[in-house]
Length: 113
Image (cartoon, rainbow, N blue to C red; front, side, top):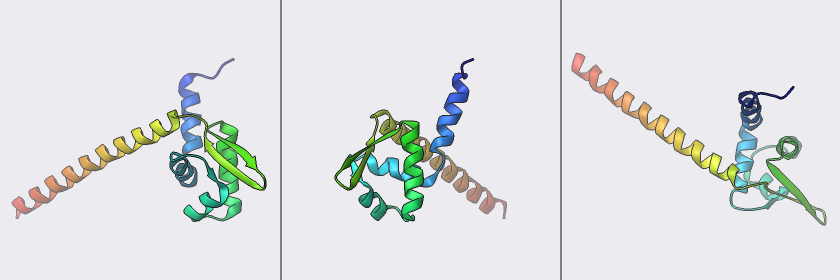
């Protein structure tokens, strides 16, 4: 029996649902990076980063290659970068809507006095 598409999408978004994973994906948008560079950019213990990178690698969203003693990660495809850009646009619109609502509430509060 196959998994319904909506369930597969939910699993995908659950896999993305960790701040360290999102930060790794953001950093990899600029191109492949060795683990040491990711560690320098993300405030997390090496074991924590390793765990999150393993989740991303198992899901197929990132790939890794070994160059000597260095492991380099990169996005498996450009669609991930597009997804992150879409998320940024959606969040920007949501926050703009909240700011407009806050301004309207402030104006209404001042008028009620």
